[in-house]
Every structure is written in C-alpha cells, then in structure tokens.
Amino acid sequence: MTDILLDDDLDLQIVNNDFVIGDATEQNQKLIISANKGEVRPYAFVGVGIAQAVHDDNVGSLKQEIIKQFELDGMTLNRLNIKSSGTMEIDATYG
Image (cartoon, rainbow, N blue to C red; front, side):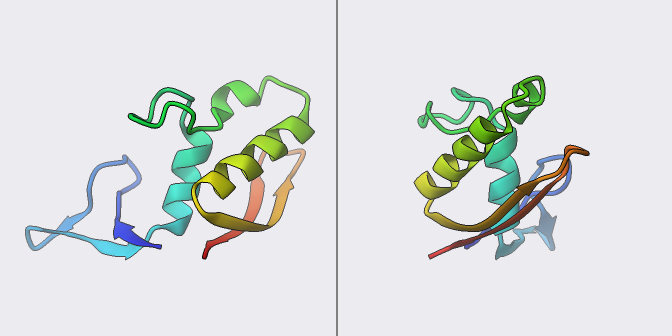
C-alpha cells in the first residue's frame, strides 16, 4: 500500500519540503501491532497492544488478534511466526 511514510520516531518523513511517499505495508503492520485499542481515532477497535500482550503467555490469542487486525485493515496474512525470543516474522500484503 502506498502512503505517507514515517521515520523511526513516528514523525513524518519530509524531503525537499514534501512528504515522502512509498510502500507503507510494513509501517502499517508495526503501527497496528504496537497501538492499543482506543489510540487510533476514530477507530477505537484498532490495535493489538503488543506491550500488554507480552505479559500474556497465550501466544495463540496474540496470533488470532494480529490476524484479525490485519484482515480488518485489508491485509492477507500469509505467514506469522512468533518466536520464543519475542521477535516476529510476518508476511502479509494488501489486496
């Protein structure tokens, strides 16, 4: 999905006084996973809230929530692997 891009600090990327446009798929995935429900206005139901989820031992429910949130955003999840180290491998695309 093409959209306005953010930098690592979630600030708008601006070059030559203009917004940077590019593939925002991975950016959107990170935002959905990190957002808590209620933080994305007017979409109060959006967000996985990974900061709270890491305290839950139920990886299955975390996976289900990620799948649900990505599908609500229009993504197709091809692969999701949550490793014991806490890292994730995600293959999801729009369309």
